[in-house]
Length: 454
Image 1 (tube, rainbow, N blue to C red):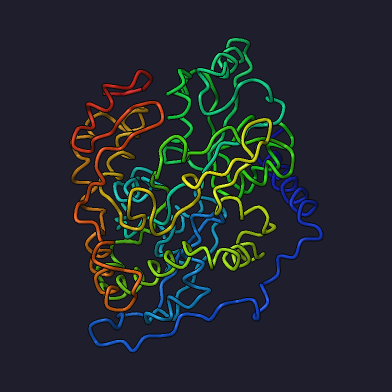
Image 2: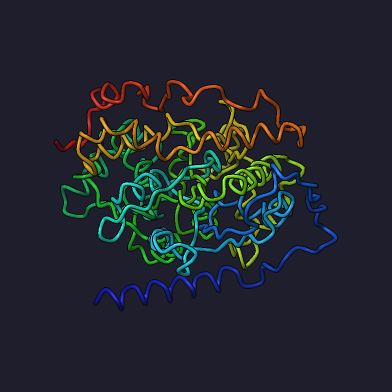
């Protein structure tokens, strides 16, 4: 089937599945009577009044986008003088990449939600048309956790779980490759975090992602259709898509990324550097709004309202039941679909077990860049440039200044919530590997499976 016809089929199938699945489910805006009051606007001083009141931010309809949506819906942008913020749903990560290249002035976007290290790759011109550099600034981390790997139901009973090497799942996957029927696993954009989560999990279990499986990029909106038609064996993406696959009885959750790396960084708010430099007060106003939205999202008292807001047609367009589990840390795990509740796995937006979620740690940026070297996406020489790239893209000073200003406005933000180090310290993974951002080569040397290129 020609590629155009295949894409047309997948989109049509996805729409049909969605229509069938959502029939009878109300995705309309929640009743005003069920909503809490919006944030009250502040009386801003000249020092805190933003230079502009608007910005156009892109987002993908997954749980990582919640702080941007809540900042809009609950009035946090308006509270800080950003009354003309527009948030724009992106059809795919590729579309977001294209829209940031042209900017809002050309009908695109000024920034928004990004997988890592997309802001760094954009800044270096590594994923843009003609290798054009689009300098970006990483302003905040949006959340931790919220990702999983769903597996098609035809692979039930084959040991596909977190510890593939122990369960026999690794040998099963390699056996498929030997028989010429490679396991097909998808992510939503190449060379960034959802790709890395898959690769890390497989490699830690002795499965070479470059040899033993087929990895490919597929937009999240096509997940359900591809799994239903059995053209895909597995999919790595953000909630609510893994939960939707399970609840539609077309697959099961093999593992959560929270199990691979506890309190792992997920997606980020990043904006074009020219906008930030032209509007430093607006940048801090934007950050203050997002931070307050993150605090709101983490409050259990707001959970049901948040689910109702996100589920709407204009945002995620899914039944509310597909979202609740991720906020409770409750997932039907494995091919037995056994409900497992673990506080450590739920999505966090403001604080997690290791402290600040929102602060953009430079040590995390370094890990993502190191992974691009590990898998041969970039030459080893990038490690010598990593500190420069991370420092140039980091907007942690804006975050720190915004959070400091919030300590005088919001009792939920104190000086203890502001990290004093750009590194979160040594990170530990489920297989025992560790990452010290000051010694990325030592991390690479410790890994058995990799594809490093000179």
